[in-house]
Image 1: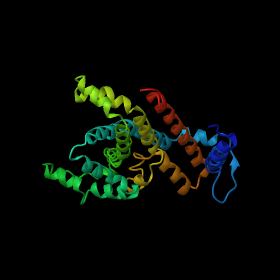
Image 2: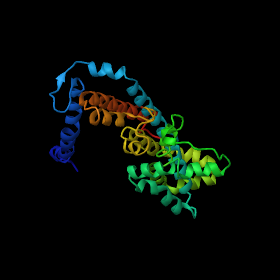
Image 3: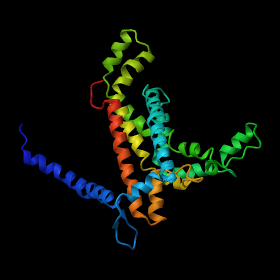
Length: 288
C-alpha cells in the first residue's frame, strides 16, 4: 500500500516541532550566550571567546571534565558488564531468577535524591554501617569520613550508581527472550557447552542491546547532579565535581550564566562524542 507523503509529514510534524522549539532553540541560545558576559539583572554583553579562554585556564573545570570522563568510562564498562552478567544469570530461568530481578530493580524504584541520602547515611562516619562493619572485622581504629576524604570520596560517590545496572539488565533480558529457542537447541545438539553458548551465541546477539545500554549509561553521567549534592556536594575541594554540578554552581552561586552556558556547550559536545564513539565501537544496526 502506498503511503502518501503528506501523511508522513503530518505524523512527523509534532515530533519535529517539539525538537525545534524545546531543544534546538535552547541549544542555539546556549551556544550564542556562551560568547557573552551574562548575569541576572544585567544585559548580555558579547565578550568574544573570553569565556572559553577562562574555561581552559580553570583548574576547577579541568577537574570536573576529568571526573566526567572517568565516570563515563567506568559506567560504560564496569556498570554495563554488571548488567549484562546479571541478565545472563537470571535469564536461565532458575528458581531464584524472579526474586533476583526484583531485588536488583529496587534501587531504580527510588529517586536519585533518595539514593544519595541513603548512601550518605550508609557511609556516615558516626553511625553508618560501613565503618562499623570494618571495625568489627578487626580494624578497631578505622574511622573514615568517606565523603570528606580526598582519598575515598570519589570511590564512595561512584558506588552510589555503578553497581545498579537494572536498566542494562532489562534491555539484555528482553533481547535474550527474543532469541529463538531453536538456536540454543541446535547449539546443544552440536555439543556446545554453556560457556560456548554464551560467548558464541548470546553475547554476539546482544550487541545492539548492550550498545543501547552503554549509550544510556554513558549519557547518564552527563546529568548526574542530585546524588552529588546529597552526598559530597562536589567536595572535598573539587574532588568529586562534575560538569552538571559545576554548571549549577556557576549559575546559582556565582550568577554567571554566560560562563555556565560555556560549560554547557562542552557538556553537549561530550555527549555527542560519546554517542558517536559507542555507535562506532558496537557498530549499532550492523549484522551480528
